[in-house]
Length: 389
Image (cartoon, rainbow, N blue to C red):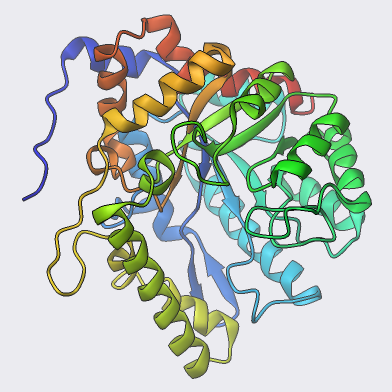
């Protein structure tokens, strides 16, 4: 049985509309063809099978979205081909944003203020990982294209330690150079995916506010990607923000039915990717089929193939995490991360349902000024401090 839709009062809807809403980390959905990438459908189609698209973002009252893109096919794209792929994908996003009457790429503080003033969707481009192959000129190239944030600690031990990798590896010299150059270029430093040692080392280098764009509290759920209390406080000490992740595994752990959901996702994706890699040697053909809109929703859960019911966590569990973040880091340092298209909270499984989160924050006793900070004001403050003039 599907969960009942929650009734949202006119007062809550008014509060949600009046608040600046910023999503600190979202994966854009691109379509792939022969040697091409396109963001056209994501910008113009509501696509209810997906968790976010530009029409859904606007329905959800979102003012700024951080679109993070990385190498979705490392087995096919490496070296110069990886950088070519990344630039082609960012070009696709920028082209559609420039064509869209209600969207703006955020390159400067002025762009941010104009987008908010004009009621346009502000899009801040973010780099997943550090696909620069040790060359800071490539980082500067991404910045010139329009990228304004990155979480560089992902699957590359040359840069620094990352979750799931060797916990003994901290910040490498290349990672230190990347962080310093990011700050110089006016890019937001995101410590998502950094392991504990690298996280600690990076904070010693940072001179501006840093973020962890999509995480939860390790004190509530012992997952490496979640922030320990001292990490929450350390980010707050920089003036930064932690963004709440919308994954059941981060919010409530991987027990019972939720473990089934995660296992189903992993099995589905692993088997699908292996088969597609065998069949399609051209990387763009492979990507077109890996991200086939008719197949991808299966990976988001609902029920496993044998009919076993999968129970996803409620928005109340998410607010438990947010409340803990506020208690530890302070209300000025907590935001909304989401990580759509992989959020699986049953009541806000799509971005147009975000007013349900606002309603739950109200129900739990958060005051309107606090809710505005959590929904977006905190991330906006960091962007204004970090983006170039």
